[in-house]
Image (tube, rainbow, N blue to C red; front, side, top):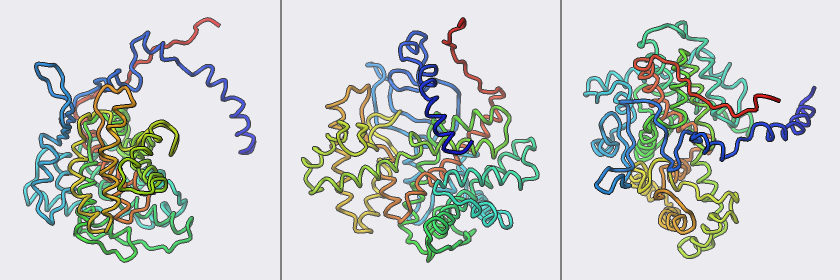
Length: 443
């Protein structure tokens, strides 16, 4: 049976799936089951314990739980504190990776040793780029990276060896090579599918992760300190987020089964690539392009607001009634990552001559929450999230849209690795949630 026959057959059978697999909201309410492991207020169902990070969006007071400015904590440090302590030309990725993995802030000697180890691990097996990455190029760089991750397991003589130290080693090597898998995966696609020039630049072991990514991506290998600094902050802010996000939970579920590091990280990649998770900044960019095309005067807030109202009503853009980049599953008053990041976005916009675009983003940041509050019945406040600006930054850096979600993965593998180690050390039980059967037992 060929492809077309399978398409016709599947189309004929889809109604059976709708009839027999669709479960109504009434049954979820009847049995007290929370869709998506979230209650009616959007709060996640408690499924585990962690010492790695914390997300705060409410404070307890005499009036009960009160929404507050969002806070993101890494190992007891607020992320804004970690950013504020950096020197002008100091990068945060390596230092924060050490903190999340090992639970303590490194001193100068420890950081130098750790950064040196990551630098020395930025290499791939002989002919891997040619035989694996270039062999089947894909526009979906996340799929390309996932295939490479699973293939790297074949080159590891101790892929299934026990001991926490083996998992730490594997995680460190993957953290080091992720920028290469992403950049080379894009170049292979761009060459074979877009007929563009091919260049494969080797990373410099003495450079930071952000610097190396820009070096490997660009034909001339050049970048400014501001460009590298802004990308470094973006990576640091995306590293980890409380443990309850979909891809991190996937890491812990797969790890709890006793599976190997490569399989756990590949599963997390498959989760992250979903548009409801890691692809949100792409939707923001598409929406912004649509707004630019339909709003004649970007400085006229009344015109911008009128078009946003159309988007919210499902009359414009993708007709889904969503203003992308607004709201978050946890934060209400503010997303701390967005507040930190915005200052760097403004500096980069000024350097790139994008002040007009920045002003449009500022207008939407003010207008969209007002519109959503007016038009929608919501349980908590709405504020811009970090995805609202991240795509804008990547665009100013000349990073192609195919690499937006892979950049998220380059950052988030740090959090995945920390949670894998914590799951291996502390949980010792396979994660096996229960599902209530509502099928007919007599037919």
